[in-house]
Length: 532
Ligand code: ADP
Image 1: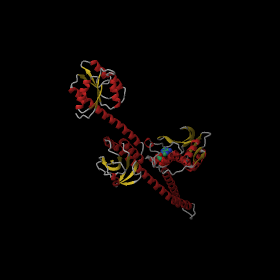
Image 2: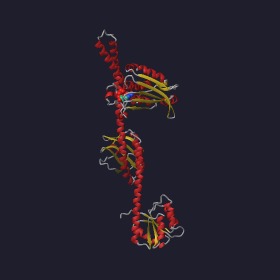
Image 3: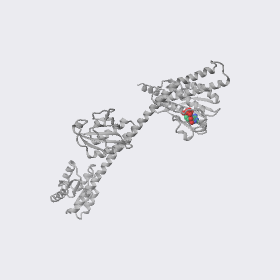
Image 4: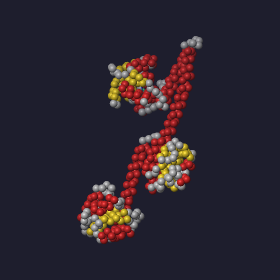
């Protein structure tokens, strides 16, 4: 059996027994401590790390039972293996000791072969228990690391957490972690090192030889190669993404790293690799999104003027300013005008989305009366309502408080919801707009609802309804002109007002959209926060 040298405490009041055990155990390669009673044993166990106790029962000053009781009461000693030394036929004592936590027993006079077998077994059991304990502790640490890593998608933060744990667990005092690309390292985070975050460092300058198979290397550095003076041991950890080294972590230490460090770091890197890859993907997605927003913003800006010109000229010609028109020309021009208006709306929606996504949409908060905004909105879509012979009923609670909102954006939200009710409900149907005061978080809000008796929303469509460009595949919906942007914008605008939006709908029966806008005091403080 491969036995590591252990420290064994022999507790016996009989000097010849102590001497015999001392001699036998030392010959077996163990270190031995001797105590002639329980009291001395306690003192030794308090001062030094003992792996196994061979314990006599009947002793003056303090007997074996009391030693066992004392050990069981101490968390750090309660799992130490104890082999009781007892006289043959003393079954009662053996049972009592086992009840008090002893692991095994040996009869006196000591049989050498049995002694060695018991000691070896106990020492091995203790070693396995220690290994298990260490694994459990490491597992707990890795779980904690996962929790911290999973809480962030920010690349710099994930790098900071990874390096922090690597340095703490290996006791190293200097380190850095960075993205590897084409032989150069972009430092994401560094501690105690001469390099700084965001610095671009050629890997050759670090004296790092990257091992493609991912083995961790510990290098001993001569003073000329030390990145940080005095740090003469270096560990390089390569972190892989799809079999390619994407990141490098370098740890430096004064003196050799503890042997356990390598095992821990190779497990840490597997956990960090996933979090670093996710953070990199997140960054790429953010950059792509920003590029998309910039493109939309550019295109919508460039299209605004030509669309306005087309519309203006169509209106001028339609009004006969360029000479008389026949009936067909008049119809064609009206078609051009109507489509220019649609294009203007689409471009303006796209512009809003790109500004909201880029955080560039500024709300102009003021005290607003919902009743006034609603009247303006109903008037602006009057033609569409009359065209379908629908009736809009407004049922607003009396004494509705003013709300602190952006007048223009509030009317945009209401216009989107009301024109959807108009579009997706049949001719001659009723549309209801209601507003009530409701408790909202710690304060109050206006809850506004727009109800129609229209085609309703299919179950399968319900969780897509606020997504950009979503339009139902329903043939009846497709027959109606739309872009799938209105509800997405309405949702984002409501959220910019710190409100919420939701809906209830039954297919074939009708739909009600609800949204809340916090009442004035909350909105005022919200405005103050945004100015600050
Ligand atoms: P658009 O109306 O331009 O298609 P919206 O973002 O306003 O875009 O609406 C997205 C989709 O939600 C619509 O295409 C339709 O399928 C559904 N929808 C919206 N409002 C209603 C409503 N009141 N009744 C039924 N379906 C609706």
